[in-house]
Every structure is written in C-alpha cells, then in structure tokens.
Length: 42
Image 1 (tube, one colour):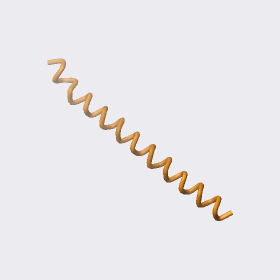
Image 2 (cartoon, helix red, strand yellow):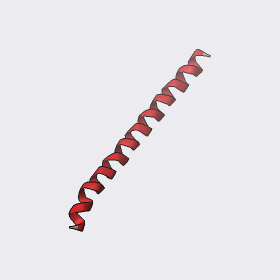
Image 3 (cartoon, one colour):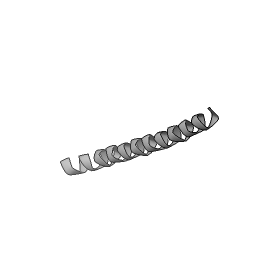
Image 4 (cartoon, one colour):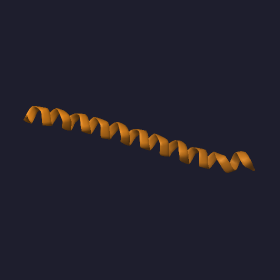
C-alpha cells in the first residue's frame, strides 16, 4: 500500500510540475503577445 501511495505521489508531483510549467509558458506567451500587441498596432 505504501509503495502504491508513493508512486501515485510521485506521479502527482510530476503532473503538477508539468501543469505548472505549461501554465508558466502560457502566461509568458500571453504577456509577450500583450507587449508586442500595442507595438504592432501603432
């Protein structure tokens, strides 16, 4: 039982890290688009 729980915890950590990095990447793209947006328009 403990081994199963540990494996699930590691999987959860990996999933959380992946989701976090994806969210950071999306935020980075969003800010980059917002910064370049007004420059492109004007």
